[in-house]
Image (tube, rainbow, N blue to C red; front, side):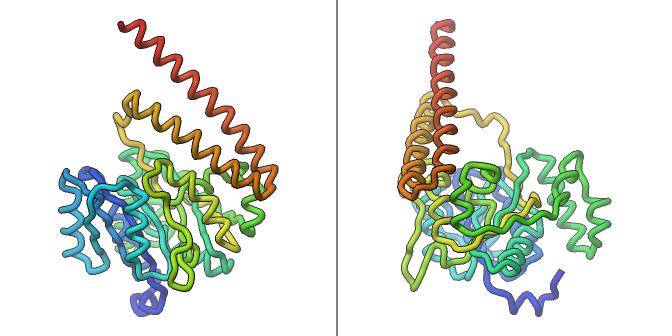
Length: 317
C-alpha cells in the first residue's frame, strides 16, 4: 500500500453513488469506499429524494469524512442522479457504484494502475454476484489491509466460504482499442461491457473542453444498456481485468410486480433495438448479429413469461 504522501501526489478520483431508499445497504456501500487503498477520493452521494433515512445516513458520513460530499435532490431516477454527480465532480477520473453494492478495498487502486499501465481511457473489472457473505469478506479483507496484513495473510485469514476462490485467481489482462471492443460487442466479454459500475473512466469520456459530451438518458430505465457502448465509442483504449473487484448485491425478496416487470421487458426490448441500430449504422456486423440473436432470445423469453403469467392468473381466478 502506498504511503499517504505518495497518495497526495496521485490524481483525484470521483466515485458517484446514486442513493434512493437503501437505508439497509448504504452504510456497507460507503464503508467499502472509505476503506479503499487508493486514498485521494471524492465520494459523491447523490440522494435522489429518499424518504427512508438514506439521506440522513449520507449526511452523517459527510460529517465523519471530508472526502464524502452529499447532493440532495428530488426523486428523478438514477440517470439524473448520476448526471448530477458528473456535473459536480472535481476528479480527473470517475467511477460509479450502486448504493446497495460494495467494492473490494483495491477496486480503485487496481483499475487506476491498469489505466496508467496501458494508457487506457476505461478500465473494467469482473464482478461477483453475492449476498451477505460477500460483505463479510469485504470487512475482513479491509481489516487485514488496515492492520498491515500481507497479501498471503489476507488470502489465508480473509477468506469466506467460496467467495475467495475466484476473487483474485486470475491475473489476465485484456487490452484492446475502442474499435476492437465494439466489433466483438456482446461476445466473449459481454459481462464486462454493458454495466457502468465495474469501471474506472477518465473524465474526458464524459466531458471535453469543459463541455458535457456524454450523459445518462433522462427518464429512461436500463440506462446502462443505452449508454455503455457510447462510452466505449468515446474512448480510444480499454483494458479489462479478470479480477473480481466489484460485489453486485443480490437482494432477497426483490421480485418486481407483474406490471413493473412488463414495463421493464418493454424498456429492455426498446433499449436493445436502439443499441442494434447503433452497431448496424457503423457496420459492426459481428456485434450486430450477436445483439440480434440476444434480442430474439429475449423476445422469446419475455413472450413465454407473459403467457405463463396469464395462465397463472386464470388458474388462480
